[in-house]
Figure 1 (cartoon, rainbow, N blue to C red):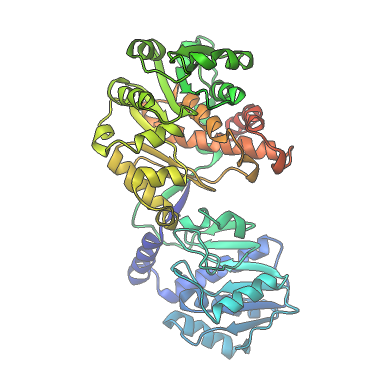
Figure 2 (tube, one colour; figure 1 turned 30 degrees about the vertical axis):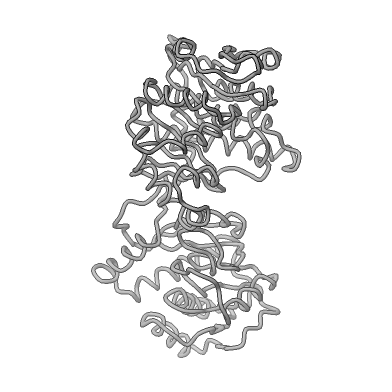
Length: 502
């Protein structure tokens, strides 16, 4: 797992390090060396180099890199956007002046092979103003190989949101640790490649963890011959309505559970649509729920008890609609079901109508899978508030609700309120109808066999498997043509990759 720090954690840890362990100038020298080496490892510096410096220690890192470039005989120019120096920054600026490094206060990037972006650091927030906005526009239009020191200037360190504009980089070199802003919201769209370099800053607070294949591959190993389907979990998938006409997508829901490792998947749909779904089912078991003459789902305690008998996990909400009967089912599950309960789609909408105390102490282990709009309804926070700091928003709600929260996005946040996992897999082709159903199916399958002590990791593994399978599909199928079923078809290949990574 890879550490991902909040801006507050990084600032606090940086300050502690410079006050107690390493002089600030030495720490800046280490940062510069890591930036210098990282570019060499990515193909090398394309001379001449423009080092564009703004404010704070990010500018100081630029001055220290410029000195290394000069020492290496690489032609470079420092472009100053501000005359405000930190003490450490001034130290390296003066060293550059002594060595005759060119300095300009008029930014002109034509003819430069590399642009090193050192305008803002991780603490940037708000909107980018002048002269920095014009500088970023010139960097993005330069056609040069663009390197961002620590994080792309103009991008929020916690949010990954641009302040109206941000640098688009070929390489971003996170100093000390990745920050949340390297992964969330717009980050994937403005960084072609990113690496993290350690310079000796020990994080004081617990960081989030970016999931790697080697962290989760063991969950998918199945090598015991003396076993049967019951050892790997019976799971129930409850969804569908007359209005939800995607019979094939409902079948995909259960198929993705089986492909992810469930021993038995029971697809439960209102009886009125069962015949439409049946032709699409092969390996799954179809369970008919009670429904009224006009085709609406009708809650029955006895029917629900039969469905859930012996199940380890259940998922609810996909295509069920918002009705009093669905709400009754959800309330029953919260009060009576003792397994793992994944709530998605219409289930989340119904849950948002209940008070936190009504499900904080539920009998089941609750797993919520909202996208931003659903999370807005659940938490009461606006989408803009959540996007400003998705990690804190998900963590706070998980702690308040007692649930595991899987907040969907370009990078998915998974947390129980204490531990935070990030999953940065997925692709544009997954933005298609039914993709949420596939994820719910995968989560159900994994929750059917994941041990209690690794349930949170199992939920993160579900998000990772889903994203990786989607990426494998997109490697063969144009993003614009992808269907949710394409992701399911690539689950086996994705599982194979995870197991091979152990």
